[in-house]
Image (cartoon, rainbow, N blue to C red):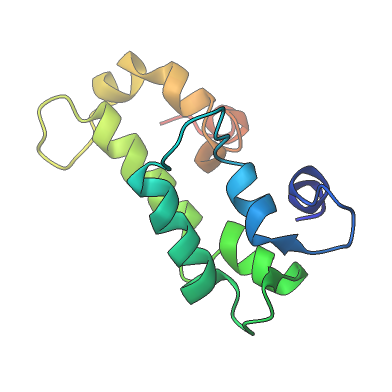
Length: 122
């Protein structure tokens, strides 16, 4: 959270305003019209990110943006590992499928970046 605030809060006031929010993702660089996705992000900021409607995101609002409470990181990572490794798409992983994608498992947060793999013998 602190790193995000320091990176995006260009004027150093402790908040992320709409222009700082957009400026982190998009630079106009002389283009006359903004792409549609930028307009959508502006609407997202006003409608959902700036919950108290004061024109800027405070630390709590920023935290809700970058670390949403309804997002299960462990489940998402597990689904990712199965999706990428399950070669026959049967929804189950065999030893061979895991070994074939061992680099994916060693680099995963779900296995504590490989540390969990050395504690098991199966």
